[in-house]
Length: 430
Ligand code: EPZ
Image 1 (spheres, protein in one colour):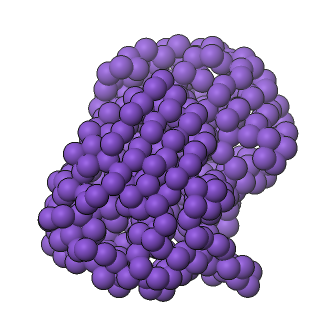
Image 2 (image 1 turned 180 degrees about the horizontal axis):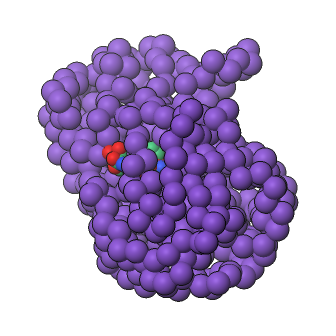
């Protein structure tokens, strides 16, 4: 397995182009199952997760035209001959569960491996299942698979989410698009990736309202048409690279992004002392001197994103003072703590709260990535640490950050990939 070696201490200076959002691209790809017409997605990030989902869809019979590094994919589900998403593929990328809603809505049948837990939590899908049952699907859970049957189609229903669920909202919104009648999703997720999916579905002919509220109203239609959709910028990659400027005392211009996608994160980073100026599609972040401490609690959008929790923890390890970081979304999302402490950080965890006492500097060390966002927090720490940091299990990184070492090296980072032997005893998160 590959590793990444970083010699820390270089302030990053330069321009980074932000890629399309991974967590928008995945549901958008599964939306192709809702119609036999072609769906063209542009600004596609080139990531392992995208390749894995492409394999799942091809397995089902979706024809894909995807020229690697073209950042574009055309999907056409006019011949779905296998309505099953097998365990071996789903285990690699739990977001494969997003085929469940569109597949049962379009064909009346879907059999999808239960995604199982991962490093950051048990990751249940009970909301997805209960919602489909309310829409009239017969659900069977056996041998680690969920089978959904709706031979007469799905019907609209009022569905309330006990907790805000991003993919739960996406799965049921897609199912509702072809259901008979009106579906209301109450306490729906408002993440920008959910809104981006809704915008694409509306282009395909879906009738969805309530996008600026927590109740989505979907009026079912008989069929959808072809569409072309540009995937919105990745707000998590954006926040990560702003923090890369902050932790290295550098100056980065991020392009092809959208500052309105991180309304809570930007003020927090400015409070930490990072100087941020924005235009419609760029963010300039620079920092000199010491960082100040911040307290954050992760929350559903528009609150502080849980996917940026590990990153700000890395930033705070060298701030002047103590920071409190509370994780309220997932039950086990502090795996990066022991790894950061190996680098000299002073972080204490009690329950879902971490107390980060800022140090003058970190020291490079061999560390291990455990999930996608934890892995990038170790890279951030390595960029600032004295000496060499080697991050292992970087396949986690490749799932969500396009060409991370190229983008950082182009801005002056001393970072390189150490090719490892191929092996697939990988554990997958998120
Ligand atoms: C999405 O995961 C993202 N993944 C995650 O990003 C992100 O961390 C998460 O939303 C929260 O923002 C994708 O979009 C592909 P949830 P998702 O359903 O949808 C509980 C990354 O790093 N819950 O919003 O799986 C659940 O346990 C990944 O890119 C149920 O109890 O998360 C959690 O506590 C990591 N039952 C909370 O809700 C359910 O049926 C929120 O989970 C569903 C969820």
